[in-house]
Amino acid sequence: MTQSHSPGVRRRRLSAALKRLRAESGMSAADVAKRLKWSSATKVTRAERNEWRYPKPGDVEALLDLYGVEGEDRAHLLSLTEEARGRSDWHQYADLYTGPLPELEAEAVRIRTYESVLIPGLLQTPDYAAAIFEAGQVVPADQVARKIESRMFRRRVLDAPNGPHLTAVIDEPALRKAVGTHAIMAEQLRFLSGMAAHYKVTVLVLPDEAGAHPAVDGAFTLFDFPSPEPGIVSIPTAVEALYVEDQDYFDRHTLIFDAVQNLALDPQRSLDLIGAIAAEHDKRA
Image (cartoon, rainbow, N blue to C red; front, side):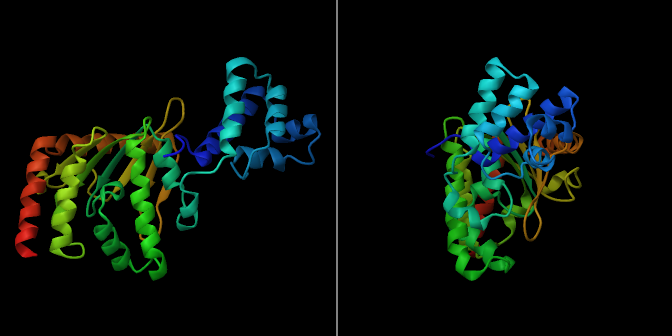
């Protein structure tokens, strides 16, 4: 990828930092607006809620002056401001996403995902992805090709020097479900085995014999960011994922993920099972 950061996530970080600095100053949004001679407190709150398209360096500098931010902290936040004004590598696909998924993947240092009935998006083949989009009947037919292309493009984050490590715990039914055709599934599982050899990817299979488990209610993904940035939990729905930025919620899902990871087969036994199920799909193709 041509850049190692996401402007959208940088804007979110900048907004969170400005909100924290104001809270530490003891000033209200109205106090800040009055001190800076801004027309209303709305300008302050919109910046803190990340409701801006391109942060203005002059406005950020004025806020940092008011909050007394100097040295490395000031330089860091001004750098975030410039990076937040850039354009994402995936801007050509921006119209396909109502949520921040590509930006979160690009900015995360670690991605942990549990899937109950599907192969994780970053590990899908084009034919498998197409079968999902077509079966869902949610994506307009004229967008399917671009959705597939964008999904393959997103996988580049795994090859980026500072890209995230992906740990995927996949429930056995996801491997056996004939998405599209058995031939498509056999190809998908062979590709999954190949991706498991990637130095930034760990694939673990949760076998049927594990029975009921803490994540039995459904899939979710955890995005970890550099400290002190809070993590985000993503919960998929039939139309678009929900993104929750709440530390308690994140911590509870971390415990759930750790539990299913401990119940999963080790990497080699997982590969063995994936290979065996791929052979079964081959026979039925």
